Length: 262
Image (cartoon, rainbow, N blue to C red):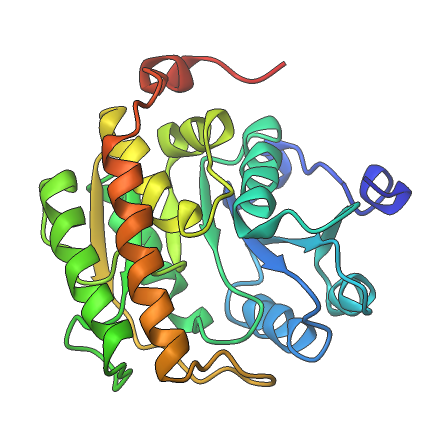
């Protein structure tokens, strides 16, 4: 971790100094063209919330841009993937007394106007997912990628014991028990940050809900896939979910509710 992360950009706001114990975690890897606008938009919408950008080993100016926009920044020494970045964010949240943490992607697809709606889901569950394909917005995916999302949502609905339409959405919030759970176990494998993390949380006795949100187009860069890429996505997604379901997860839920990492 860089000296910036250990210094004033890894700042701790005391619980009594905050209006809200809510942390917005923005994982970012080489997002210098997007992250500044994303942070500024978040702070304009919810200035009372704290924002930390987890710079996941970027080789561009992501950290500097995020810092200039008003976020606290933790710089990881190399790329760990979304799972590693989010586990860092959850650890930060737990150690500094936040009781709600919500992931907002750096690319601008998650609308800050929906943050409170996703957080409101925590009033009835430990984990709240901002879901596409829930009759809000015009987000559309076709072909193998959509088939995979349908299969994943149906299987995860059975695992979670509630209807989910978007098991792979990264726009999700965690309450105090889920934050502690994710510090203990938050997988870094492909799809681990979305699928395996949900399966493990459900196995630990945590509850899941979803709220409808409208996703936006990525501001800069591209995340689109061709037909071959979509087929690979389908196969990898199904494999990842199958592995997550059959993998034995440690009984860490009860421990995570009461203990903080040393």
